[in-house]
Image (cartoon, rainbow, N blue to C red):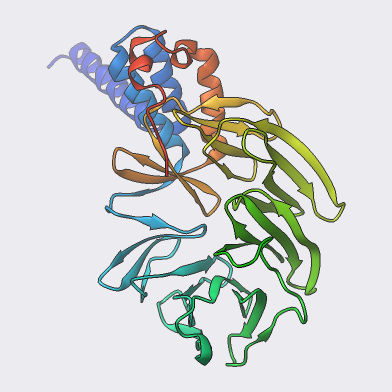
Length: 369
């Protein structure tokens, strides 16, 4: 082999290796941009639409689940099998659960899970061992009285019969977390639900049903009530530091409200009309309508439709839980929103019914929880 021939061969090999290395080093965001540019060039439209969806999910997702039949709470993803709760995220552990009823909460700081069957409460550590336990009230074994639970440092706090009860995990004693304070629903003689959400030292307690709820906010460190029994219209709230996002109003005139707790100031961000449900995140919300799902940013107050055939399942650990044809994933709301708004400008036909073949086939398939 002569010298010139070897030089030519080596130069081609170097170019090929460089190209492969460049391709493999492309970030998920860059790969998304590549898919958009490929589509804009007019290459296979149906395949290109699916590729943009695929790259969007790769860019925005932090965890993917391949197991079937997964469920979620506001703080963890799990599956049930033969009386066992198999936690898949954030920790991976197992513990026994009741087949009929379960309320549970995962605390990232202590890496503990609190779980109740409506009567007793147990706390499990990151290895699945018991870290604390509260026995059921003897007189009310047949009544579901523990409606919600959280963990705060070394305290187990749970809602029982209208009050917040506390238990220091190293002891077996149970006592009111706040003396002589009740957090009832805004009605009597009706079943009700309870949702507690913790953000740092604060916890919100939302109690009610069928569009009538009372929400309160408590400073756990100071054991001080910052907001007491504020009337709201949905179980969906988001506690984010000193800010509480909630839904007010009534059918046809729903309002998204931002309430700053210490300043005691309310601001209506936007009004809704024909909606089925809303899920609130730190920077925006997901609005579920009859035939579509839309994302809205709190600051921009701009709605953008989720044009891809992805099912929105709910909120977990502050992330969007999505179902992509049976494969579940946790995705960042902000990343999804930003890329959808980018596509509105880059490929506006995606957002016009019938304006593009690929988008027209897939746009806004019926979605729900």
